[in-house]
Amino acid sequence: MSDPGGSAVCVPGFWEIACDRRVVQRAARVAILVGIVLAVINHGDRILQGDIDTTAALKILMTFCVPYSVSTYSSVLATREYATIAKAGPGRADG
Image 1: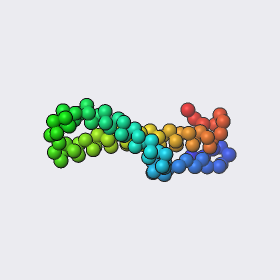
Image 2: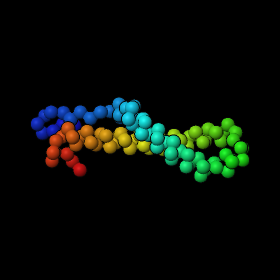
Image 3: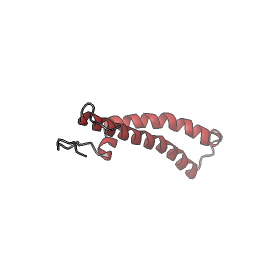
Image 4: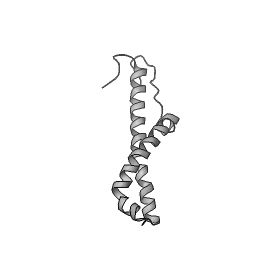
């Protein structure tokens, strides 16, 4: 993307942002909180009964991946949008 003056607006890439320590920590906190709630809702009866086999354990672990992924994706989009607006300058960003 470039502006009318010819200078390029460089926005960080997806993986650069997704691997940033702050994004990873935020996503991990969200995954723990939301993952616990989802695991209890979806697998609470089996957890309480102690009826957890390998398949159930993998499903529970996957339950934590969903909020981590959503939080990371959301952080990347927000960071990229902020970088685009900040580098474009006042009154020059679309949206």
